[in-house]
Image 1 (cartoon, rainbow, N blue to C red):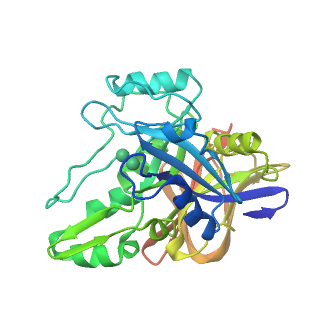
Image 2: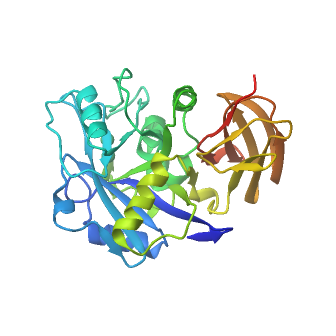
Length: 350
Ligand SMILES: [Zn+2]
Ligand SMILES: [Zn+2]
């Protein structure tokens, strides 16, 4: 957790399975791993169950807040949907449109899981993409899912290397999903989070049998950072509300911890007398500019309305903006994606 200028930056991991479904550790065990690594929050999402929520396992574990939602799937096992901030599991007979609408109507928080998942040609496992793109009413989507990317890149010739050092093979979110997200964000706020899809699952390649992605390894990869405009509460109900409100408001950036701790990353847009943090909006005027600062140097890419507007390497950069739209920042280290911010909206103008 970082506190600066009245803001608090929380670091956590989203989309974690436990022994309640196909994970390999309990909530208590996984929370202990997260706590050791200094995470501020974990969002659990087992398949089609809220058993542990009703057993009171949603709580602080030391300084780590564990929140429990679940992962819904349709009858074809597609359209996986992470539903948080609710207390009921909807019937599996519902269509995606129906469970997205039901969650929305009840005020739950819904996130499309691994929406653009595809597999390499030699794939041994099927993919679980989002197929119903006519749905509305979801709050966000996983712009980066560790398991999806890993599986998409898995080929017969590289499987041993990928199993032995899984973190090395994460490059960046796909252009496909970023394009979809930028398009959606032009008309409304859509939260972009990172999901690890942690199962601690076992993999077999020839004679090799091992647990790839133990939780501890996964928690050192894709992280989701939330910006609070106030201190993080120690009161459970207040803290839970802070986390879900930050996600709904898109006060989010995601990072791959493998390339550095990104918590100190900062992206704001200033106009004369007004300033917006990630997720916010600011009116366009003659002096509107995007200000980016990084904990260590990286290649900063400014994206406006889905288009690359500038690309510069450094630790701190300022970019003048001359038109309204939705802006976000990507940071690369070498060819590896490191940090991806949510959008800031610039209103008015042309
Ligand atoms: Zn899934
Ligand atoms: Zn999952």
